[in-house]
Length: 105
Image (cartoon, rainbow, N blue to C red; front, side):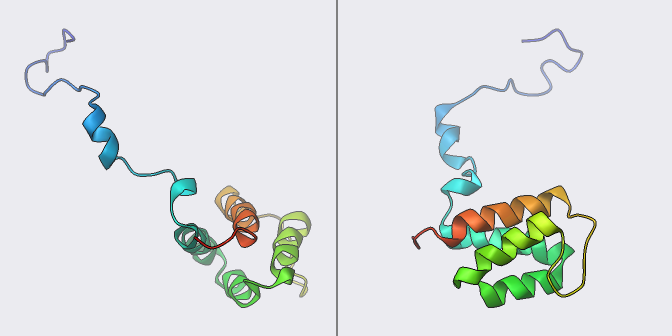
């Protein structure tokens, strides 16, 4: 207990093991399709055209190559070069590369 002027107004926080069951799972422990949808939503928010292209390629061997090209070259191969992508978009690209070749749950 602290000697704060608010002591007694708020309940003391206690780490209870029963609360562990209500905590959200890390994204890596969620179903594969949920992870894919989550990463695509991030990409779609910033780059709808690129998300549409990934949707078309998904499941084909060229999809991973396309994602690598986006990450490494900063462009999409049709003359639209980019200076770079936001961190969360790059992270989504990299996670999709990992997810692409995983077996479905």
